[in-house]
Length: 155
Image (tube, rainbow, N blue to C red):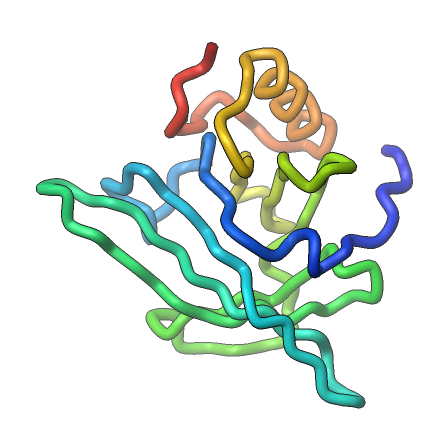
């Protein structure tokens, strides 16, 4: 694996559109999923924090939203502990990893250390070549991509 360097949290902040994801209980029946990272906070002696707002539409075009906080765990800003109100525990355990971000911060691959969760994110739609590249990155990291649910149809 290449050395990926540090994540610039200000560049990472903003709206991300879900291109694909592994199935998970909290996004069951979701379409048009988005994540917004905003309000970077830092207090001396504490980790950086970003607010997170996830949204999607469910059957009947019902908007579903969840707000939470991402606590940055490592100095390279790639490992986070994300907590939402519907999840009862908050810890310093890493449950969200930024695996890849392109140099323009327009494409991202994020997952979990246990390989149970994976998302392909973008600021906009991706070409099939870009999707293929991110799928190959996911496989390099040991993720099984056969069960991905595509929000954006490939191509």
